[in-house]
Image (cartoon, rainbow, N blue to C red; front, side, top):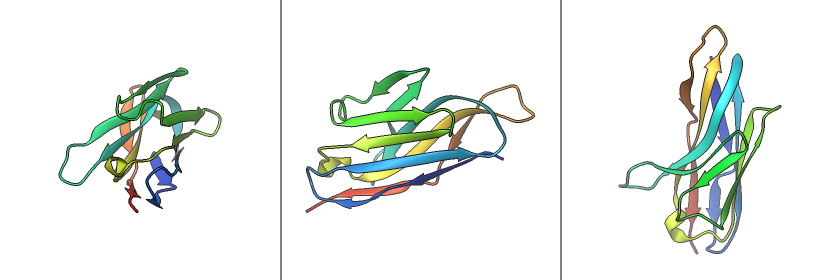
Length: 120
């Protein structure tokens, strides 16, 4: 069983910073893509950023402010969020494309989500 556990959400003032972390655990053969989505109240879930093989992608709305990094040895991914804006307020979800032990195909796994609120 593969699990993703996020940490690091909270309340921050506009212009502030937060770091989100996500750790994948369980019987894992390989992880391809890791990333972060977010879902604001009343809106659809959207891709924020992803990382695979050292290549990163970012939503236009976070370029230059957010940075994703990954530790392949520890199966962790980190999202550094700077210059936060009220419109960044959302539940942030970690995701990973994983081959679990006993399987040969990738499956997508999700964390439980962590709330980020940007407000003065």
